Amino acid sequence: MNGSVTVGRIRGVPLRIHWTAPLLVIVIGVGLGSSTLPAWAPGHSSTAYRIAAIVGALLLAASLVLHEAAHALLARRSGIEVKDVTVFALGGVTRMGQATTPRTQGWVAAVGPLTSLLLGGLGFAGAVLTHDAFHWAVPAAVLAWTGWANVLLGAFNLLPAAPLDGGRVLQAIVWRLRGDRERAIRVAGRCGQVAGALMVLGGWVEFAKGGAGGLWLTVLGLFVAMAAYAEVRRSVLYDALRGVRVAEAMATPVVTGQDWLTVDRFLAETVPRTGRRVIPLTDFDGRPSGVVTVPGLLTVPTARRSEVRVRDLAVPLGRCTLAAPDDRVTDVLERGGLTPTGHVLVLDEGRVAGILTPEDITRLAQHHHRPPATPNFRKVG
Image (cartoon, rainbow, N blue to C red):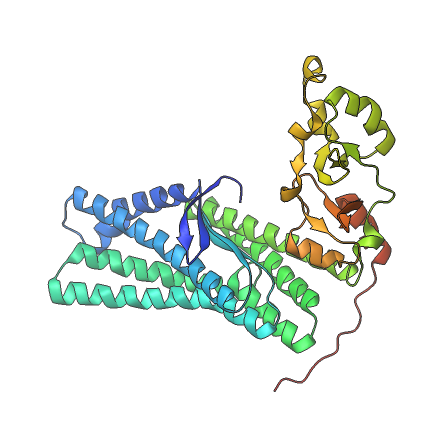
């Protein structure tokens, strides 16, 4: 997620904090210290409330990290690749690969909300112990609020709507019943679109009545609806490309360029021969060295184009998404997706065999698109 910085690791998984996460702490801290805690534990100083509010906001942030860490750790234990965990203003997200079975996916999805519910129970228990045994009203109120917030977080995430965890559980159930993962993704995604729209509607009604929380619910609903829409589109694409090999999709013949050329020579000699926006590069020995984009070359001032080498502006081979002609397109997209330059570089025995662009994939998906087949229901148990 753009705008995030790595702050540590959870058993080797990078933990990233988005710039909006501190806003969450500030907003929650202000509301907690100015209204909630004075109402739950009256009669204390404003300083005590401020300090307790900061502690409560940080406890909630830690709860979000634990929620996502539960997903990440169980996924890794189940053999799923986990890229990173990111905490942002609307919660958290764990980027990971696809589960290979519905059972694995269901448990990996469910463990996050279950962790939140467990933390909620611990918060309530700690509040009772702190209040009854030590008579510390403000700390007890903070723990009770943290418990309530975690229960709300766990319950909300169990809603059967992607991209929420409950949507992933629903996806696993449909996948298990119908035997079709892409169809299951579409079912959960459409539920997410409906849930997001209802959140937006409810948020606007609440905001119109003067409730500031309605604006937050509206933003959350928009996020859910857009993420669900993206999952449905991805599922339709993957279903259309099922079984298609890279060799069928890549642009051929491919024209490569030499990375030692200056920008002005490259624009004058190579670009007209390719007619493409993304051009594979080779070094002096003919080995692939990366790719370059025509828009990137055009950003070089005219006066400097005779001095700058193309390789200085290229995306190096190590940062490219690579594929072989016999790879399945869906496997390539699952493994690395399209890079920021919008390409997959296809290599065959160390030589450039072609290049795969979003336009190529869209064209092929339209060509291979077919109505979904009638599902085969499988008996459970």
